[in-house]
Amino acid sequence: MESILAIGIDVSKEKLDVSSFDGKKRKSRVFSNKDEGIEDLIKEIEKRIKKGFELEKKLEETKKGTKKSKKKNDTNTNTNSITNSTTNSIANTTTTDNTPTITEVHILFESTGSYHARLALQLLKWKRGIGEHKANEDRLYNIPIFIYVINPLVIRKYTEESLDRASTDKIASETICQYVYEAVSSNRSNISSRQYETLRSFLLDSSYEDKLEIKILIKTLEGLKRTRTRILNEIEALEQYPDSYVHDAIESLKRVLIELEKEIKEIEKKIDNVIKNKEKYRELFIRLTGIPGIGKRTASAIIAYFGTFDSFNDAKEVSSYVGLTPSIKESGKSVKRASYNISKMGNPYLRQLLYMASLSASRYNTQCKLLYNRLLTKGKEKKLIHIAVANKLIRQAFSIVKFNKSYDPIYGLDEDMGKEILKEHERIKEKKELMKILKQQKDKKEKINTTINNIPIPLDNILNHYPNIAEY
Image 1 (spheres, helix red, strand yellow):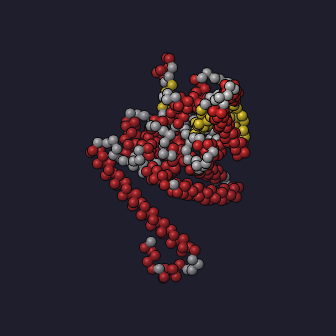
Image 2 (image 1 turned 45 degrees about the vertical axis):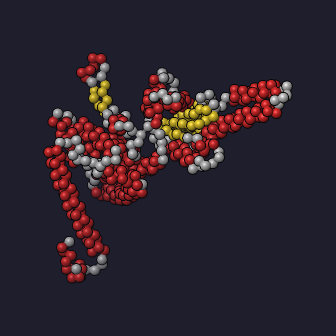
Image 3 (image 1 turned 90 degrees about the vertical axis):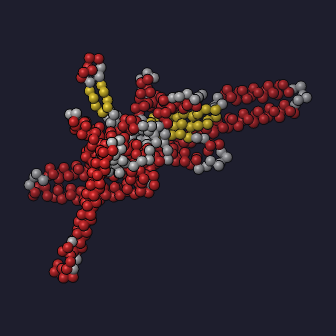
């Protein structure tokens, strides 16, 4: 008998509650959420897979022995007794062990901030190692392994639908295991299942490691920037006191601020290097930053959290993930007083970045500017308008990445309006080029001034040697 092995894992800081089901047996165990514990989990999975293979091999050998016995004892009156005893041994082996042969392994766990990252990385490494040994005779290396990191809201909704209100780590892992087994089994039975489609959208691939590196760097960068803001606020507060009391404290904070600035620049450089070293991310970065309103910071975050948007079928799913979709609450007689807000059920960091990007996009992004003006004319609040613009931005990003396009400022506009928009974009482009030249000249002048300050000779001597220096 062949079956899938479904594994559900409830992840916490210290431990992993693991439940597995192969269509016959359910099993639960607890492992440490450390490298050693995850290695033990992987060994347990391999042991379970090999157990099915060994039983299958034993059954095949028993069947071969039966055929040989039949040939040797065709003329013997004891043939029937030999055959019956062998058949009984096969039946006993199947019924007593009851272990099916595993053909696929599906591992599912919830996204739990940083707690699930170690597990995901080690499982991907294990999967990659198995893939590299495909030519090996060991059948373990021919087993497809699927790893999913699902949104906890999906499992919560599934639990509510099953009317299961009990809540322990073991029960949670069993529920996750049941979810993945039902989803995959329905697909194997050629039954169309929304549950399976949802599961597939959370499948981990090899790009997870690259995206995780960018994500960690971005979070580190944001942490440093928050610290910088806090220190600047402290300095501003201290400056309200007489200088004789706070001079040393302010100088100390300024020294910390200088080091912070160095680290911020270093992290930004590392993010750029990670993106530049990956060809597909480099191309994505260029296309994303081509959207007016989306800068380096936002583009890097979109790549880190979405990659190439392979897990999303349409722009609406992306908006939901970020939490920019409307949430309407009304009930009975309160219909007239219904509240209209965004769901805020998605990623708060991305939502914040897109909101800040919308401030620029509402001025320089053609489609976003038109949306902004239209909603402003209707008397909508500016905060609500910027949320709508942020939603428009992430939809533009999805379309450009998903369908391999570049930003088109006249997309969806009539011919006359399109011509006017193109002229405006040319003017903006010329202005940017001029600003770039002015900045280069300014940097050149500052460099010369720095050089002059570092040379220990009188200024008159420099002017005599370089009479045209005043032109700079």
